[in-house]
Length: 328
Image 1: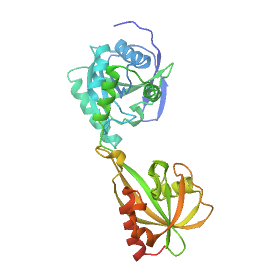
Image 2: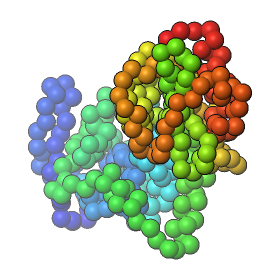
Image 3: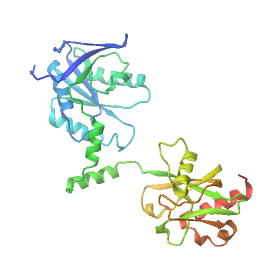
Image 4: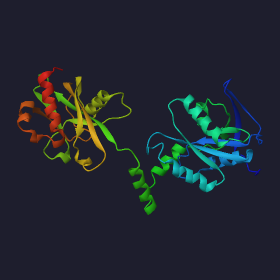
């Protein structure tokens, strides 16, 4: 066995009692040490390297199993399996590497993991699983013994990804990497909300104008936020941010894809959900990206849709249909 400086404390995980205990750092009688992780980093950092070397010092053979997300390129899972496989193999050519797909059920995932390990260690004297900080261990309910390795100096893969995400390099490889990332993600349909604000008798509608719109107007609105509970909350936020007023009786009008000039020719696009609400009180104060707000007679706009930006004209037509058949 190779002698190395151990930078981890080891703890046996007692699944039955739900507690942990520190154990001596000594080579076990089990042949195979199994490391399960995601390795979503640009290069193996010192914690990864110490982890693999620690397990190598304790076992005759080391197996690494890489977790695979059921999504294409995301901020938390930017690297595919071949890239991570090559990264580990380059530095540790004697390590055997497998993968396991994510699953919403910890029990099913654990059963799948046990199946992969059983095949990988067939004919050998068992296996021990190893995990580090925020590892798979709390989700594992399988049959193999597992140990938690506590690093002396913890390194966050999330923080490393943020740091890398803020770096820009004027190299061909970097440009190729950016292109690869965009070509290997799902097409995105962005969710937005648009809000028609009407007066007491529904005869007038409040529209906003951006500087880039020239002399044409639009419904106020914006992109949906994952922090919001629903589209209605998104709509109320946009009204407050862009007009500074209060509305009530928010009602659903329609949803549709928007012909936004920014996404013409792109695989991505916008689908908006439109609401109508009644103006209650407050001075109209344009804000955020709205430069001007103005009340229009609904009947006059019907006669001249040119006052509205092209992408919102169909929304206005749907609003008119809704107002003809509904009350707020």
